[in-house]
Length: 84
Image 1 (cartoon, rainbow, N blue to C red):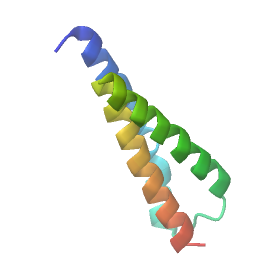
Image 2 (image 1 turned 180 degrees about the vertical axis):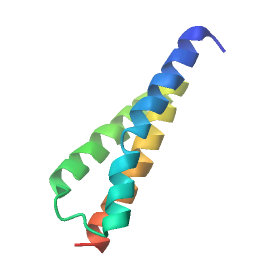
Image 3 (image 1 turned 90 degrees about the horizontal axis):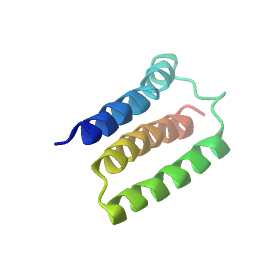
């Protein structure tokens, strides 16, 4: 693995982790009323497109990062619908 690939994976990890505090906060408070459904939908659309792009160009960092962000977005969407 090259240093450029490692850089991409580390950057992707840091980017993905930024969603974790929000997921934890929603889970602990059992409230997602301030979370915008429109924002989540647009985020998931954009991240899905980035994921498709990453798969098409076979870029592990893009695939990894956007898979993680999509997973956390899906959890937030689940909580948004559950804790309405």
